[in-house]
Image (cartoon, rainbow, N blue to C red; front, side, top):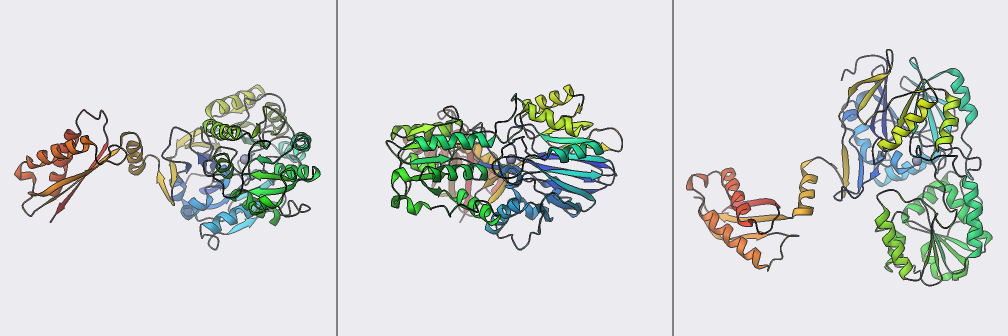
Length: 548
Ligand SMILES: [Zn+2]
């Protein structure tokens, strides 16, 4: 694409589609600004990778003209990829105090903290990044200090909402600043780029205050140990639970690494200020069951989480059983149903009562419902609506809602370059996109050779044959074959395949034996043939030829 043309454009590199991992780009007269940089968790369709993030290759090639990265809020799908991708972006970061505190901890773990310049943006003051004239506006969401980003450009004003909802009683932090949105609407807004998560949900959002009240009532009515699982970043929820627990005469204990990290970040920023430090899991046995409430990680059935380990009775410090209660104060992220059900099943088997948002009001969503969306559109009155952050059916429903309000809606897929002026607002180009999987400490392209081989191995197994040859290319000794995940070593089939392979390489024509590559290819063909039809599979095949 031509980077030299002037004007303003918008390009999502991640954020549309089934796995929400946000990486948005704006370009103004040849200079780029990134907004959010998140991870996503893969569903059942990619078992070879758990944590995914957008491939930043397109902007990494242009990192010299990338003037900054703005983080709208501290959720993993908005900042979780920063510590992994920053080495390719190498730009300053702008975030609220809370998001900056969460980010610093992640960058510290990645040994990047002294390289990354983080500018903390307090309140809703204006700030500039390169040619971009920016301003935060407070929105309510399920994490403290969520912000919409306003971009004032020569082509017009863009409202990039981030994740938001309307909530008259958010418990922690301010309500969505509707007056600010109205004032910006009065200035005239070119486009609103906005969250589509709940675009299929009618009505208004539930309030966090109603969850607090209902949860307090529920906690007061229970006996035995209580464990409540929720998202670590939902400081308002943790705050409500902790206060309800104390009112009911229970001490609050935090279990799980992500909750402890979030508690530290939250206290650094002044949250939980009048609550005493939470107990840690080592204190579990020093408090009577009826006086203890645990807030615990694992609401999505994550296998290594504290709750999964308690459910399978493999947690070093905590047990739950007959008479105890586990409350899921969270929604089930699509794709995690089976894992969550398995944990709930294990808990029930131990005699634990499991309560979810189907039984009591113990959770509300942090995203705008259709009525919330209408309210914001009526205040902002953009010329164009650009739905992001959702699957295709959410984006489509969001676009239809905007059109009903007389607003032009533009549906984008990751990689689409939307011209926002001068000239007509339309897709003018496509940038390459992709996904990277976090594999141990490495980032691997989902479409690359390593993960393609992993997928093949996962379903079809791998067969490795090794054999030694002399100077002239004649086989010395017996070849060795191993097929981990496919055949046991003592399987008669292994012995048959080894024998057939040995016979086949003996018959390889002499002229192929001098050239290692030709010899290896012929041996691979022989190995495939030896595997034959019996396995009824096409495993990954490799041959090690050793010249001795
Ligand atoms: Zn969010």
